[in-house]
Length: 610
Image (cartoon, rainbow, N blue to C red; front, side, top):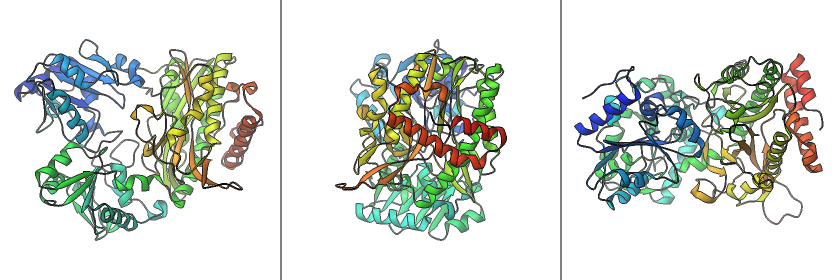
C-alpha cells in the first residue's frame, strides 16, 4: 500500500490513489465534499476533496479512474476551481450541464468497477448512478473502506471536543418535549424509530451543542429516536462528561459512535425505521436492510419543528442581532477611515471585523468564514479569501462583506448573517454601480415589505427581489433567501426563497410564523464589482382589517446602516424612501445605546433621512 506524506504534490497524491484502486481491483472512485451526516460544512478529517485536488469550495466532487480524472463544480466556483485545481491533472466539468454518469460513460469501458464510499452519499444518489451506469455495462460498488483514506497518511483525526448542554433557558423547550413530539410523529406514521444523522437535528432534539465543525456548534453524533419517547445517542466516549449525562437523563442512552452501524444491523429486524432521504447516507440504509429492517424515506421530523423558532429563540435572536449590528457598524466606520488610505486588504479587513465582534463576550464563533471581497472578487458570490487570493482593497472601489456570528450567553442566543456592500473612497461610485445597488435595494425592500397568505412558499416570493434587475436585463445566480438556525447552522432548511425551477430544495416549502430567513438579492459584474444586501427576517402574522384568511409578513431582524453613497434616490419610490428612512430610524434607536463617541456620531450621520 502506498502511504502519503505532507510533502507529496497533487500529482503524487493522485498517483497514490490510483495505485490503491489497482490494489483493490477497482477502476475508479468518487470523492465528494461530504461527511457521514451529509453536512454542508465538514470537519478537517472529512476534507478529502481538498486534500486530493486543492479545491477549497464548499460544493463539488471529483471522480478518479485509472486513466482519467475530473472535478465537477457549479457556476459559483467556475473561477475558483481553475485557480486552485491543476487542469493538467483534472478536467473541469460544470454541473448541472455535465453529469458524473455521463462522464463515466465517456471514459470507462463496459465492465469497469467504480467504487463509492456509502457513508458519504445518499441512498438515492447511489441508486440513480447505479442505474445510469448499468445501462453502459459499468458496475457501481460500495467500497468496504474509503481508498482515499488509505493513502492520506496525515489525515486529521475527528475533533475530540466535548459535547455540552444547551440550556433550556436558551432553547425555550425541553428535550423531553421535543422527543415526545417525535414519538407522536412515529406513531402517526407507523414507524418504530427514526434515524437522525443530521448534526444540527441531533443538537436541536437533545438540546446539546459542540465544536466539532468550524462555525457550526454541533457534536459528531447520531440519534435513533424511538416511538416510546426514548432515544439513543451515538457519540465518541471522550466527548461525554458527567454534566452531559445528567442533562440527557435516563430516557437517552449514550452509546459509542463506533457501535452505530452494528446497532442498525442487529436491533431492528422486522421493524419499520424512518430515514430522511437528504441526510441518511447509503451506508445507513444498507445496514438496516442487511439486518432485516424495513425502512421508509420521510423528512426528519425535527427539521420543520427546528425551523419554526419559539418565542425564546426569537428573542434570543433579536438580542444577538443588536450586539452583532453594533460590531458591524464599528467595522464600517473603521473601514470608512482606513480604506481610502490603501493599507487594508481582504484578510486584514476580515480580521478587524472579527476583532470588533470578539469585543462581545457572548460571541462563541463566527457563523461562517467571512466573505471579504474587494473589486472583482466581490463578483464571486461565494468567494473565500485566503493567503493566496488576498488582495488590497483598492481606494475608489466597491467592497462586499458577508459575515456572521454565533452568540450564546445569559442575554440570549442566535446565529447572525449579514451582507453589506460599501463604497471605499476617495471619489464617487459610478452611475452603473449606484443603479445596480439601488435595484438590488428595491428588491430587498419588496421582500421586507411583502404580505402574503398563509400557504405561500418561498419560491413564490423570489420574483419580488429580482423584478427591478430584470427590468435592466440583469439577474443573479443564487437564491434570495435561506433558513437560519438558533445558535446552530447558518444555512438551515427546509424553507428557502429562490427560483422554483431547477428542483432546488425548499422552494416549495410553506412559510410558517417563526421561521427565520435571509433576504439577500445581489448583482455581480464579472471581473469588476459585486453587490449584495442581506438582512435576516422573521416570518410573523399580519393583522389586516377585513382580511379573508390568515396573512403573513416579515419582521426585519438585522440592523446596520446601508451605504447611502451607493443609493440613487431618484430610482426609489416615495414608499421605498420611507422604508429606508424608517429602517435607518430603527437602526439608530437599537444601536445608539451600544455605541459611543465617534462610532455613535457616525451612526447618527449614516441613519439620517434620505
